[in-house]
Length: 466
Image 1 (cartoon, rainbow, N blue to C red):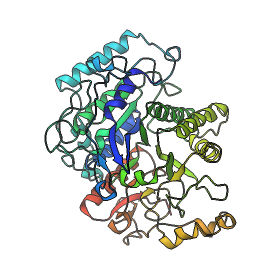
Image 2: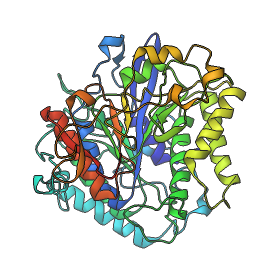
Image 3: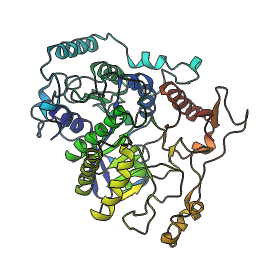
Image 4: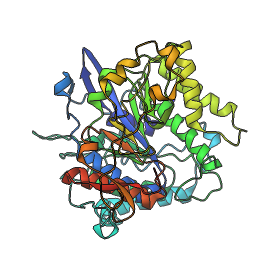
């Protein structure tokens, strides 16, 4: 079972969504090191804080229901009695045995946590606004530190974020924003404090996983592909997803380098997928097409964004995903994404898992040539015409994006590839792999956020990409 603090955070953060005769509980989940918290999360959270939680739901006949009892009394083991639940995570870690953690009774950690709590309550330390001020126009990022939600700072009480437009508290006319349903898992005191500082502005939740430690004991800005740190983060992602699902809550797991421009719910709910992900390449997909059949080509998935529904097939499949990672632990090429593709393919055929992929014209990968992914309905219809004989023909399914905006060779002033409003008109989210280190990613993410708001082209991709 998930530890008390984690379970309490999920239950008090999840939102109830009504759609087509069903009521689901839903939450977003991310994880972050200290450097990612400083470098990427301010932009990621700024984008989420501009999106109303109920955006687009009326058009599909869905709605956000009033919060039910969030006292934490149902199976939370007294978590509702914590004076400051976000800063005091269960020392057993998220779902791991107590023996696997180190220093469960470490007095130094407790002292640092207490000091962090005193600093936050007294208003000392860096705030979310000061983080955002680091993303100045002089750096080419274009984030307005005063833009977005005007929410009052959330309280640190056990009931979750306090009253205010951004975190859905009491008061007539309060508008809850998408950032208020995001839980960020952190791994050390510095990252947790940075998360809490940002929470004062954005109303998300922060849970520190005391059991998780990056191999080597030293955090880097970006983990190298196939490094021990890279592999360990894959295990952490799966663990957090499994823990949410085991509580009966649907989850949308996101990487720190995913930028939302719209709410995903209007696209996610009609899919009814038990597991869905981004695609690795720009290829023709139909989000409604069942992928359980052996005759249907299964696109390679990208786990920068994964939705999972709290139902038995998804829970069993995520558990198998973790098991596959353990089974291949000695493989120097261990990759959580490759294991995800392998396991979900088997789950869809063997466990009846409803496996789907997001529409990659709306959920965009920045790894691909061009601006997003472009194809028409006539291409989608071809998927349903004798897919078995055509599924291995690249010209049948592979596509490219909209052309770059004309300019200095299609490049921006900072050497980036420029895209504009025509390309991102229907984007829900953009994932920024293949864009260099934290500073480069932050620059391109902030440029897209600013360009989307201003309705003007911006350099949002690295120039080295085709």
